[in-house]
Every structure is written in C-alpha cells, then in structure tokens.
Length: 403
Image (cartoon, rainbow, N blue to C red; front, top):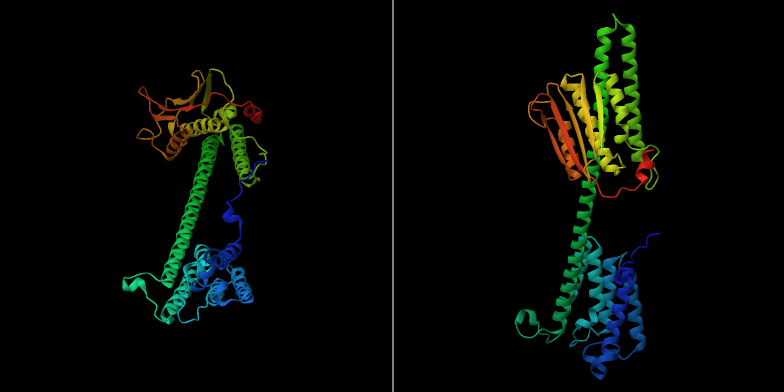
C-alpha cells in the first residue's frame, strides 16, 4: 500500500492548543525571565496571587477553546484575561507585547482560517482595546504618533497588526492555491470531455458514412435487385449495432470505478481487418498492408493509430467518390509507427488538411509528439499520413489485454 506523507506539526496540532500554549508562555515569561522586575511588565508577580493567575488562565483557556466556533468571543475572553493578569486597570501600567502573545496567536489563526468579516471584527476588537488602554494609562507616551519612543502598549498594537497581516497572507496563499487547483480540475474535465467528443465523433461518423452509403445503394436497387437491397439493409443494421456497442463500451468505461478493469478491450490496430470488412461491404474496398514486426503497442499509440485510419477511411467513403483505398501500417523503423491511408479519388477538401475530422487527428497526433500530413497527392487522390513515436519496450500485458 502506498504510504501517505504526514502533515507538518503546526497543522497536526489544533488551533486551540496553539492558543493555549501561547497563553502559558505569556503568563510564565515575566516570572521566569524577569524575576523581581516582573511587576512593571505584568504577570503573577504584579498582583501577587496564584489563585488570580489560575482564574485568568481558566478564562484564557475558555477563549482558546472557542477560537474556531466563536472567534470574536474567543478574542474578547483572551483580552479580558490578559488585561486582568497584567493589572491593566492600574493607572500607570501598560500591557506589554509579550502579554498579548495568546491574543496575537488567536488573531493570526482566525484571520488565516475564518471569513474576512470575522477576521476584521476580531482585529478591530484588539485595536480598539489597545487604543483605549493607551488613552486610559496616565502619562502614557504614544510613541507611534509623537516620534519619540514606542511604549509597551504601542508595541503591542504593532505586534497585533503584524499578526493580522501574517494571517491575511496565509489565507490569501491558501485561496490562491485553491483557485489554481479548481482551475486545473476544470481544465482536466474540459480536456476529458473533448477527448470523449473526439472518440464519439470518430466512431459515429464512420458508422454513419457506411449507413448513408448502404442506404443509397439499397434505394437504387430496391426494385430491380431486392436481394441486394436486403443485403444493404443488413449491413446498415450491423453498422448501427456496432455503433451502439461502441457507445455502450464508452459509457461503461466512464462509469466504472477507479481501478476496476474494463469489461471490453479498447480498439486498436488489431481491429483493422474488421474495419476493412465493414467498409468493403459498404462498397469501398479497403486494402490493409502491414510492414515490419507487428509487436504490441502502448494503448494510447494503438488507439490513436486506429482512429487515424478510421477517420481517414470514413472521409474516403463520404468525400472521395472512389471504390478503393489502401491502408499501410509500417513498423520497420525502430521506435516509430507510420500509418498511411491513400486513395485515388477527388480529394477531401479544397485545402490540404482541411476538415474538422482531420483537425482532430492532427491534434491527437500532436499530443503524442508525432507528425501528421494530409493533402492531395501529386498524381491525384488524397493522402493521410501520421508518424507516432513508440517507446523502446512495450509490456506484454498490452497484447494480453487485446487478446
């Protein structure tokens, strides 16, 4: 079984845990690192009560638990816990930036994961709290506006702004990645629909060409040679059944579950003889010539070569006004498959390579990095030729699948 790569640590840990850890770090920072000077920065030493710190921690953990369900209320609870823990009501005490670590972590996570309206509401709440706090502290110097020094509360406001901008950047990157993924999925669906449309065009156009030819023949001889008309109607019935079967196989292939083997083998050059028999019965003799070793081909090359022949023979039946054509399959050059369909009719169009069907063939060959030519022959008639690259080694399973 294929192994899956585990996500990074910061994605495996829930946001509630990150906010809780940020609160613990903010509460422990003054007491652990500043010792006796912790009073001027807030913390447990500021009010001297462990029970008070535990109560603030309970409020902060409640806010952390609500960071995803009720983001704005979560930020409000964290601000209350921080304000009381740092003695924010005291006239000469500023809230230090380190004390707002949990608030900043929650603000960053909310901005990165919640809708824009929610993130703006949370950011506005934090900034209003800090601005009111700066205004309420007696003798506070707002260094951002005076050009002197930046006070603790001013630095906290700057840190909150940075946290909001970081969360906003993370959200924009995620939305951009999701948009790219959605666009890629839409392009893949469009490409698959185009491929299916080409397959259906190749199949139905060939069969309808034979049906039209046989129907015309039956109409001309129905009075004079009823047995010939009966045979033509039989060919029309057979062509219709083959077309329905091909469409049914396509639908089965589209509906089957991933990894489930297809009930019907795909078409390939092995079906050329059956294609030639059906076209010959319709009144246009198809001569198939094979050169070189007819080894198994990759499925995409095998199907593409068959579709090239099928579309070309269909054009001969519908447009060439000729009774015979030649199909050549050449494998004599190593690593290369050459397919050629020639006739001596009046041509398929006024310009070389014209027609929707030929344009589809050209695109199909280009996707396989091959070469394609289509146009009138110098001595009269029309020629369609394609060269497809073939990998050096082809697994034997491909031959078993077509058997």
